[in-house]
Length: 39
Image (cartoon, rainbow, N blue to C red; front, side, top):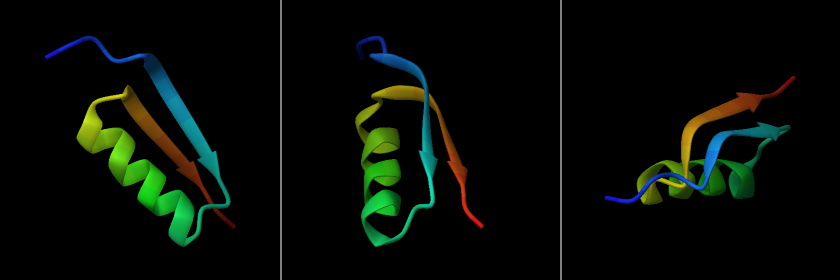
């Protein structure tokens, strides 16, 4: 396994596309942490 490219990724106002991005980032190990903020 390689090191993640990012320490933390923040997604603001996620919908269907944002949730897919968050899932893929976690599954592919692109970031240590995924932070999500919605209203």
